[in-house]
Length: 70
Image (cartoon, rainbow, N blue to C red; front, side, top):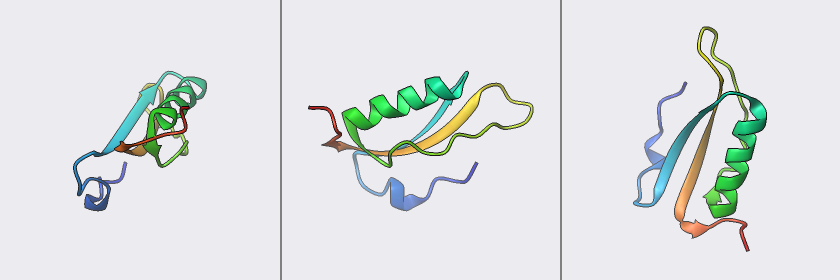
C-alpha cells in the first residue's frame, strides 16, 4: 500500500481511511455509506493482498463537507 500523501491530510478535517472487509460487497457498502455522510474520493478500487485475509480499499474524506445524504 502506498504511503499517505501529505496533501490528503494537510488540513484539519481531512482523513485517509484504509478499509478492510471480508468481501467486495461489504467494502463497497461501507464506502457508499461514507460518501453519503462526507465528501469523499468516491468508491475506489478494491484489492487483495496475497497471504492476508479479506479485501482492502483506501478512501479519502473531508469531514467538514457533507456527502450526498439528503
